[in-house]
Length: 121
Image (tube, rainbow, N blue to C red; front, side):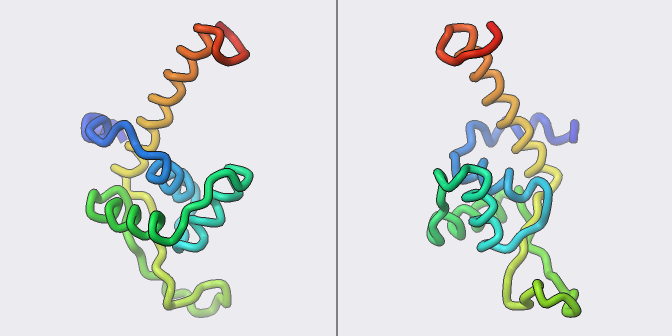
């Protein structure tokens, strides 16, 4: 991952939609609907990605080489629909997501230090 750190900084800051999609793909490859459901679940329904936002963002992430589209050929599983496109993070995409998480954590630290949030100073 270290070799992508310099490149990762070039993508920051991320839009909320991009960060949520990268987070949704951080632990598993998913199809578009699966990404949308994961984002809704991890945000308790406060963030919902509509189809235009989701697929437009995925198109840009593919072009930027932050995600790959992969084929799922395990036809033995009923859960795998061959018509669906599946996505996964690339090493660069993972580095970008980590860099954004660090950036946001630093901002939260500043907010705590200025008594804007509860917690350690």
